[in-house]
Image (cartoon, rainbow, N blue to C red; front, side, top):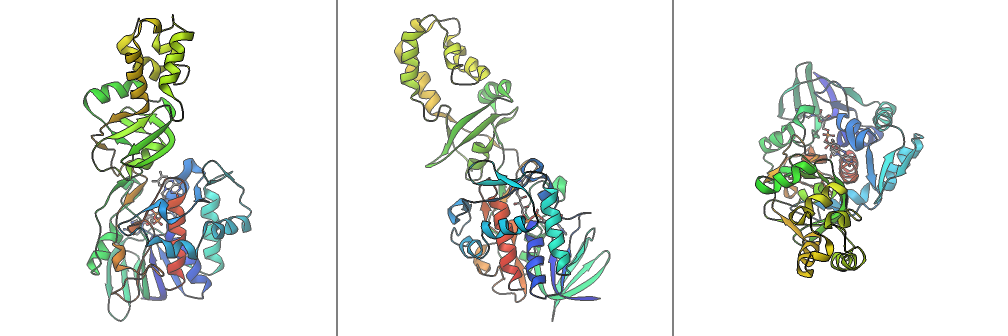
Length: 389
Ligand SMILES: Cc1cc2nc3c(=O)[nH]c(=O)nc-3n(C[C@H](O)[C@H](O)[C@H](O)COP(=O)(O)OP(=O)(O)OC[C@H]3O[C@@H](n4cnc5c(N)ncnc54)[C@H](O)[C@@H]3O)c2cc1C
């Protein structure tokens, strides 16, 4: 049996950061993963460039049954702290939009940075270890297919359920429950929405069309890009709203910031011989413009009554559509819900009733918006636990 001070299960974003901080404190850390390499999701994130944080990080950009829970960890390790580490390693980066920071080069640089930090504080990183059993007596005992390990602190950091093809498992959730912690309801987040019937028949031929849009669910709206897919809708605006959507209609403003009624009535005067499709194509992608104008195809603007144009304007402003579902964990960037924050300390991520047990990262019921927030939560929760393990 190999003895350490801390065993961290899951060498993803949160586990790596936790290992670094614990190692810096002189703790003997074992970081274990079942995958053949660490940080698989970091490598594929942000289209291979890793959107590693967001300068606009604030608690209101996170979903949780307890919206205040994330405050403490986010204040202990901020985007500026992560940026300082990135700069120290000479990694070039840029802001793409809305505070989202990406590597200029590759996400591989972020994984290499985290591994270099682990090495500098002698973290024992072991991959391709299948965990068979976990138990707790005087210390935690982790039995794997390649040895048995023991430590006074155990950190569950195996992430959420999204992208099972990449090795995502419910491991942290399952073991948290076995240790007596509660779970909140879990569901796919940051996920494309699906439609059926007439709506799908309308959307499917538009697959690949993208446009700036505002997507609202209830009182919440996101103004970013919308993408039609062969199963419904995706794109950042839809992914954002998907984390909040459970059932019911969402409303799309296809021309945010444009007075569609004034625009169409003006074009009726200026371009009376034009068809509605060619007028709409001035402000919308051509395929979408043609689809929306389909019911009045062949008629000139001059022949369309104002009330018809106002109805089109209304649809552009507030196209209300009810998704039939989501594309599920196979396509979800994150898992909403997870280990119930009522059972964890917000300052250290320690389980309240199980001394030495910690849960960090996506396994916890804290889910960020799209745009680098989820990694910031992983870094911050990992760091906070790393200070206490
Ligand atoms: C396609 C995609 C793109 C994304 N892009 C971004 C982005 O650009 N910016 C952003 O902020 N967020 C992004 N995310 C979300 C982000 O990747 C996650 O929120 C983040 O990785 C969570 O960190 P974590 O350490 O909690 O879990 P993970 O990074 O998922 O790490 C969990 C680790 O645990 C291991 N593991 C799982 N089960 C077991 C087990 N049974 N035994 C041992 N080890 C196990 C896994 O192999 C993995 O290494 C993206 C997600 C996806 C799917």
